[in-house]
Image 1 (tube, one colour):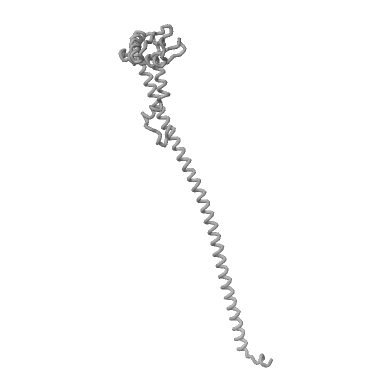
Image 2 (cartoon, rainbow, N blue to C red):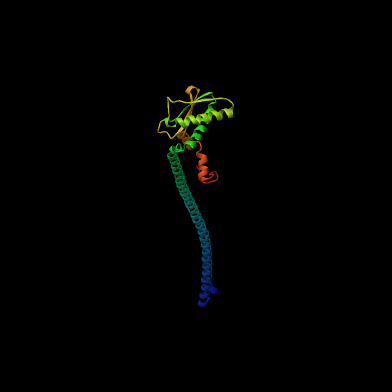
Length: 230
């Protein structure tokens, strides 16, 4: 007790200063620890938030990219379809015009009598070969009867030389083709039960259907390797 009371004020003051310094040092160290820990937790939380936001941005970007890509594909497909439709429409318009002009020219074929007679002979022969009968009748325009008779004579002679047997071909004057017809003949067999329509109008119609693929290739080229084809 005497020793404690013997401490001077300076000694007490020094002891207090030491204790204060110690407490302050501990506080500073604790504060540093808290600061470091806070920085670490902040860095972890920040990294977590950054990853979450980055993932959200990536997801949103991917979504928008897919939407933009799909929109682009739809636009490309729409443009392609419109182009295809325009191409097909232009082609069909050209074909329609072609057959329309051909139809208008049909009536002019019969004006050249020699050429027309040869065409009639071949049309009659084609029907005669197909029917393969002894008696054949031919329907024609009244105005063509004289030319048809000459064509029949030539057809009979050629038939005999090619097939080796006679055929009797006559005009069915009871049922002529209409005067408005462009020409040609209808070849009739089996007592009128079977007929082969070899009129110019029918031959053109067959061209317009059966030969259309070949005409397309001739006019527009081979479409097999093209992107747009019909």
